[in-house]
Length: 255
Image (cartoon, rainbow, N blue to C red; front, side):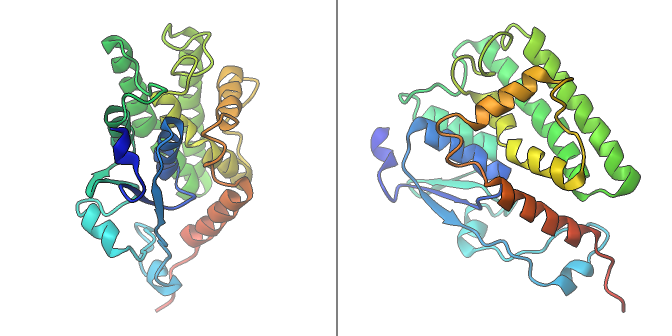
């Protein structure tokens, strides 16, 4: 399997500031896998086109032919291309990396079946509960945004409680134990976005007093080798969020 990681055999389509792309980059870095990072531009086509779609507030973007061919269903990043075969969806890619390079440390998934099930449960919780709330804070305004903040904080408190009481996580450096694992990658990739979003929106999303364990875990995760090298720059992330919020909140163009 190690031979598969030769230059030109592993490619990743994505952008620096995408939390979902960061998931994959962390997994590749932890496994020590060399790859070619192909940056998608994903630049909006025009302000006029954006303002012409005020209901859904989707940002129309240019997408490369390689991305469209590699992920024809969702047409989204990240996409991992291994020996010419594309794998889509961030956590599916992380699982693929663990299975394809299972002989490389560290193990991203627990070996015990029950522990693996618990890890998958919390990753689903993160994607189904935490991520939508983050999106609500990111795109919402006024009461809608405040409601999203409250729901996000409530979900973070659930995670705080799991770190404190769940025997799979309690008393350990990471959700994965002594090493970063599946749940750490699913949640930790959001760290830069959470911190930047809190500053831009003037919201307390991770309260150090109410969430001491989760807060300490997040700081530890962000400083870990294999993570800090690929995490988005905080200033760049704040700039990206600020620019997108302006676009989301701009009134539709007059006829």
